[in-house]
Image (cartoon, rainbow, N blue to C red; front, side, top):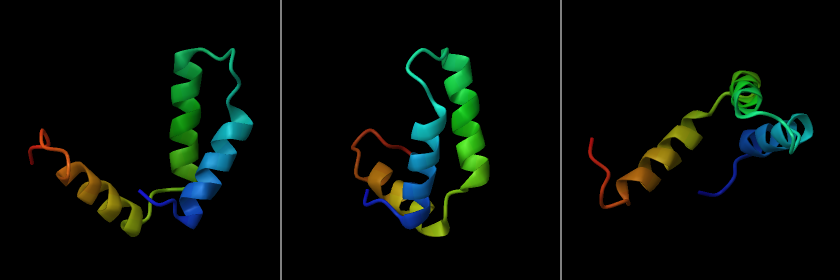
Length: 60
């Protein structure tokens, strides 16, 4: 999936706020924060849906 501008911003924010020694729960919380700050766009949702449909095991 090609990165969108908002996806790049989300990725940058996440990398700045997640440290290697963090617990899984903290990382999951930061992931939720990133998604709230930079919500997926309609384009990202469409691209994700299309990529999932390409997986043979994907069932709607």
